[in-house]
Image (cartoon, rainbow, N blue to C red; front, side):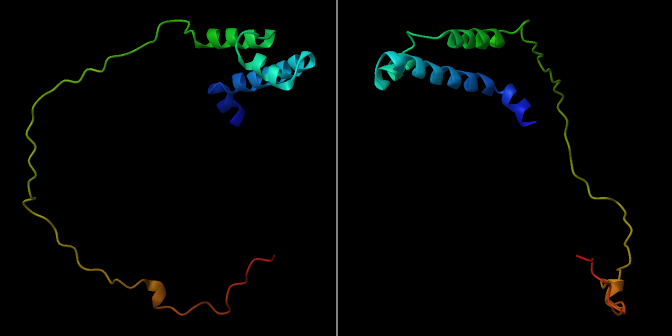
Length: 117
């Protein structure tokens, strides 16, 4: 369920992009310093093949195959007057004893055994 949620919010693209950035830093640091490698990785001018594939994948995922289906909700308005009225008759119920039956009976003898454990 976690994987399905991660895929639905696009977390897989972030994971792939992170892998691409790590690979780019490693490749660029072979030719220069670590600072230069970081700069080349994140300047946007030197994308690797994986970065290009990720960008294309994000674009194709965002394009809907068909136009969005929207429905306009239409509500009819009719003015009505609502008035609260008291009932004309009702039945009065007898009061029940408020004490539960278990309060009148003694506890079970012998006491129940607890679960083995």
